[in-house]
Length: 391
Image 1 (tube, rainbow, N blue to C red):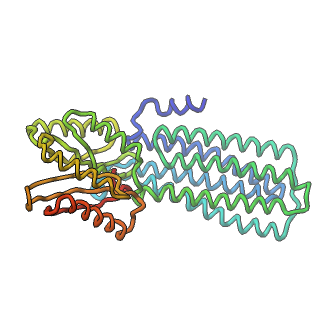
Image 2: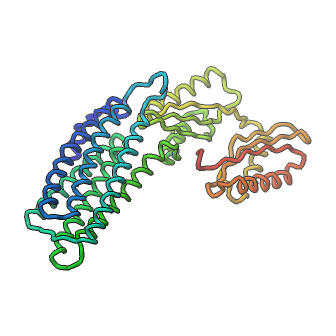
Image 3: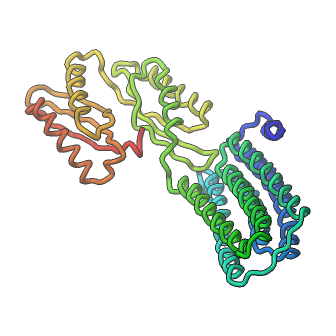
């Protein structure tokens, strides 16, 4: 049922469009405001009636979710603004800032209830419970489970980290309410301050969730490594065209969910007619934009695969390069000149373990030495790259 509801909301629309994302964010936000405020009101009254700090903590957790839904609506609205003079790539990253704001609110509320719950442990009070209260908490878990499934399905459809974070927060709320539920069941059976202990556990979980959410939203802002599966799909697509011999140095830059730019180097025939080659590159860029919603810029590297000397040298260099531990691949290989005028140029990609300049320099020197053993008089120019930044 929820899946059909999500499909009706999407209805084949272009979710990469800023205005469509704003519409989806508004629907999710309004639903969250209504349901979370309803849960806050009911649980808040239950907490005051029973004297349970854990129920009150759970209620205010729902109140922060209400505030989060309001922020989500404004965040999607601002993120959907058209590019302007100051922001030529649009305002899509505001969606990430929205998620970060939500995460900070979650952490603050969690901290406040750690303090309140510790006070409850030191000065425990009587906690009342009844089948009606337990039934209401069970229904609360059902509502939160609905919010989780709805936002998870919607977030996957439109590829929104904010909606997926909202879904994760909702399933966390299901767990915290379940802990409250168990706490109320156990309270009459022991003299331990179960209510205060449960309140601390819930508050710590709230803080933990907030930290995780903040990391998930900060990473795209800082410029996290692109998804490897997406990178491989782009490379496979480009390599499917005639006269494309190889690809390397793919870099993907995210300016928000609806604005992604990328650049890549492609190896093309050195003797191909320039206008024909330009038309091919233009076609590839257009197809990538249509299929992946990515603005791609292609840099051409002309190669000569008819030169037997070049191919022989490249094969020898390839064996030497791959004999060095830590090397993943190499590209942009160029070979010119003869005898003492030989020049070897190549770019080498090393694995992510070699993050220090010292380790990369060690690989470069070892590679230089092995190449000089084979090409004694050649000048050798090696550039080292990390595979965490390029594909």
